[in-house]
Image (cartoon, rainbow, N blue to C red; front, side, top):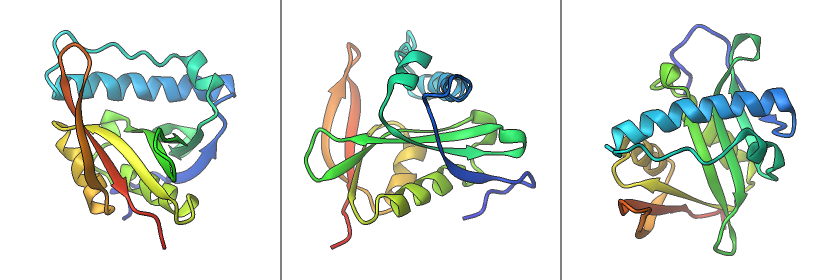
Length: 164
């Protein structure tokens, strides 16, 4: 899928240890988190607990969608899962002003390619229909439900089987 935009776009691995890059990643997370808390009707909005320092200290594998002038548009992070034999998508966000252009699909497609046949898992809010539709289009299926936080936000864990 190609984004519906005339600006050049590339997906590449990012170094979150780099201060400038960690700052950009954090800025995208802040925007996307604020949007998701509104979509989910969280009142008061859940605070974003991930700081720039957390991003810099992370050992996650980070992919970025970069536009003209290295403008960071979207981020996908991969890390270890709490279940054996699968890799967790810990973060997949796109700046609100660039959503619905296929950018999350490009990031997810690149992640699938880079995990080289390994199984992938992700947790998503049950009320986040756009995220669930995206993951389902990539072959993710629900494996578990639970709740999170004081408001008991309903969460789903999804899994995409690895290649045999």
